[in-house]
Length: 113
Length: 116
Image (cartoon, rainbow over all chains, first blue to last red; front, side, top):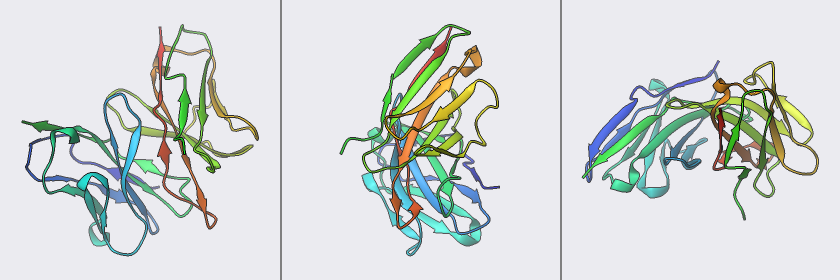
């Protein structure tokens, strides 16, 4: 069965510092991978997705993620964090028909001034 | 193009009452998913529906919970005889079909159910 692990429950970074959020997945076939962001009291917004092709994908708000098949990872990065990036981030993996998408438990990002 | 709409945004029910949560997918989307998010936890898949069909309900509790997506109108998640443990945020998502494949899911703002 597919699963997603986000090893870091909570991360704190200083504004302007770089960010990397980890995501490891388990999936028996070619995965479709996603990163979503959730602000307090809000729904989830899609940051970026990987279906195929270039393993480095660009998303909104300056985020990018790299798919590494050998490591079963899809880590999210941002070179310089802004205070407005404070939120909960979810990694998700889905399959061919997307009806079996599973989410990680999330990583809460706190940004220090 | 309006996004995924959910109502109500907040719902308070007493133990034993019924809760009905509604979800209108984005225009052109024919697939709907329901998730539950408990405090300090991630999203747990509940059910996946197409119009008039339940495709996968493997995440749905066997009792008291049901879901439908009729030909006309919104998708409904129904919880009968609610208990305090049902208190959570319930999110609906929809996805388009492109070339026969379902792609990324777009989420609604959620319904926060509180059972007193």
